[in-house]
Length: 221
Image (cartoon, rainbow, N blue to C red; front, side):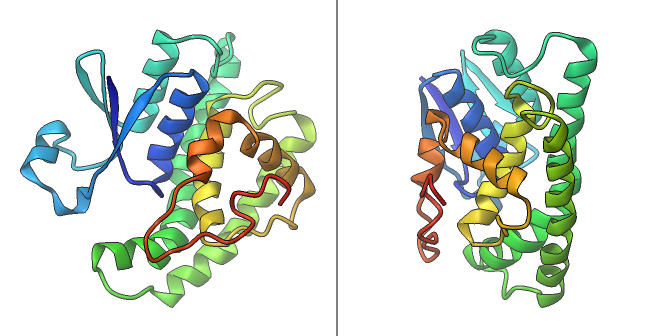
């Protein structure tokens, strides 16, 4: 049995979940309170981070590396293009969202509004929330610019870049921090990806104390 140790609103875990679901790989989801740094969890991943995937007798960490291994072991349907330059563009955008977007937006909004309370780390820092709310506008505009030229973020086919972006945006949509009216291209893109079967378990997530808005699971948002 493939088993994923995860946190429901972690964008890195969601990216792996989306890749597994798109490949139709059955997985058992195990919620992990990684911030408690239990000895058992640290044996799985000394870095103390989620996701951690147990697959084929191996324990795997780091979401980008996990997704690329999944792609190599299960190439159909493909989530990476064939050409080296096209693969570079996918990797560039995955890094954009997992690094720049995460630092400027996700960590400022989701972590302040939800993670701090769940982890018992106090109240949101209003300065961080204000910064994240401002920065997300730039990222939505950049995505809109990409989608003016392409069907999907990295090209004409769905790739890991789309799942990386959707993983972050879906966590923020859960707390109503995405202005879908800012860019029609981005809203149309999210509607397409949100309607995929791979997204169903994401939309079913429920975090105690943080109910999602009515539009969260609505495909016609």
